Length: 555
RNA sequence: GCCCGCAUAGCUCAGUGGAUAGAGCGUCUGCCUCCGGAGCAGAAGGCCGCAGGUUCGAUCCCUGCUGCGGGCACCA
Image 1: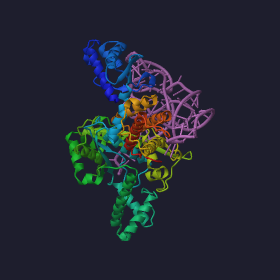
Image 2: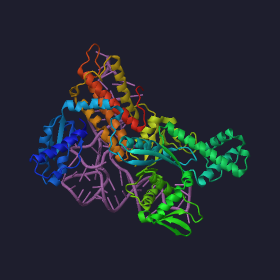
Image 3: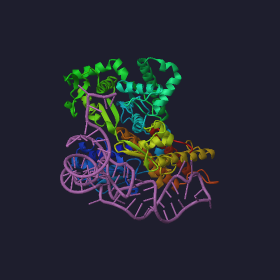
């Protein structure tokens, strides 16, 4: 029995108590939905319901008497072993061992599908993250979203949402020219312009480009600038894509700002805004009156010199996303962009959308790296910027992703590189992966011993040990953890859950012998415990997969 | 000045209205003739920043204050 099944029984019981007259109130006092929680202390039961407190006010009855009436109905429901009332009106439920234990087989049968729900079904989400300029490597400022954004997409999909991961390429405007000029200067042995790009990577780009096309430096300056700009753009973009691929972060759409302009999307976006009457002209510029919707000041779309602002592209891009059928456009931005939140929301409102529904801007605080007790400021590769590639080289993909994902994004993050390369319990990713490897090892041995627990008569009622029922309860929570992580846009919940699950497993392992020793027989207990182990392994694997972290069978 | 976020154990941090507020590290004490000790059990350690409010009940929601971080372009 899953916790969701039990919650249904609780609702059923409440309605039954009213129908039979033992609970003297209207059926409308029963909430439409309810859930059961794991009590902090196991002595309180396997699961607890607070439905009596929820109903107290609408029913106009004391919570304890409601609890008594609901409990009486619950007691006669199948799978329920014992029901107690405690404190102000908690209903504590003990499940029959067979009902609780059956979950192990359910999980093994469902396999990688266990944990998937349709709690976010029907949502069509555009998830934009990173969107680094193609003028340099993916750096530390992008890494948090590279991991969290990707995990969020996976979690949303597991909750049934349709998700497009999108990367917006700012390949237009003055910065691109400065980028091209910088590479060109280096290639010609000249100093990089003051306002250009000075990273060491510019030298690598120049060298690669000249090696591929030695004649490039013989072109006239104006042609050469364009040639370098385009070659460097293509090369740098490919490098970004490669490093993100190696980081297990894959995008469905790489959206070029240039194509936005070439396709007429900018004009269409402006038309849409004009249509809703929030555009105006002043001082020779065209403005969007974002102050109609909570922005601090109005924003310029077309400068007095006739050039389109970056903001004009942003608005067009938003309108374009909506035109492609996404009803939720999620933006993942760094804290240094938090000033954009109100203006982006205002854009949605100016386009006639609901800023609370159609657009969501999530802000992540910044990331620092520490090593040897000091902040890391220098990159091996790029000179003055720490790159994602540096981080991967330093600690590996799994440790990097996991440690970036396991914290909520709304507080600043400090990565301790010394800790992340440690293969000890100080490093949570190894703690979780170790549990998976440990179980995998045991299952291999079971196979060597010829124990086929999947086909050998599983009796769920064997799983009666306190540590076994604690583990089962934890396993039962996985689907709702994933659903909550999706709904709240907080993939770190999955990581924290996995750490708790690993702890519950290790406790079980410590208390309960699984495999038969020496010449002992294969008992029903052995079979049942192996099923429980495999169920745990499956959930650890499913959870790690949602984070884009590997689940090793040996380590 | 205005806007956003944060404040929980010595340190790094979980905990989106429920029972005795948790984990890791650090400190102290135990557990491998036995399935992976990369593990487990226990001890010590707290004005959940301060003050009000809402609630049967607040670390959680609201207001004010204090402290810290970030942001306020006809830049990209």
